[in-house]
Length: 111
Length: 112
Image (cartoon, rainbow over all chains, first blue to last red; front, top):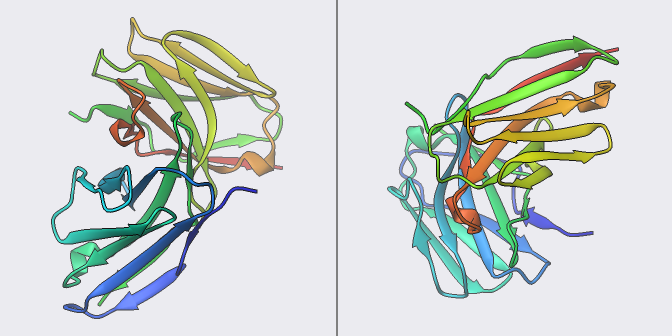
């Protein structure tokens, strides 16, 4: 059974904190993605990675960074969390075709 | 104007009804069309994937693409309470998943 696992389902952080969201996939996929999902806005791509140590900005990278030191792990970093980063964060991975698998999501609240 | 428009719903139907979910889009270069189902507090899962125009059927689900009208549909026959979820359309002009543009999702409620 294929799996994309996000480290936390729910997180509450304070404004200004550095926040790490972790994602691990067990399918040996080259491509990994971070999205945020907000009501009325749908899924928006933050960053993606097509190989270890490679990263590309998505549509809304401001305020975020990523790290991919190993093929199976893709981390999203909020350098200084702000209240407008309160959202559902979704990690996904895919192989050579376009079928992608999503994690369960992390609901982040910044207070 | 958004590239992909999708009615947010909720759409409420009785069990056994035929459900029609729709998306319109503005980019004529889109060729790959997908439907994802997302249950509450879960990540989206791929339901249907079609390339270019035409129909594709999988059990109770049929995906339809009309590129001339820039309109895609997902039909669910004999709807079940377990179909209650949010349905997201997504589309792309090439095979790169990072190029997918998602609709905002339609929430479907199927009552017993």
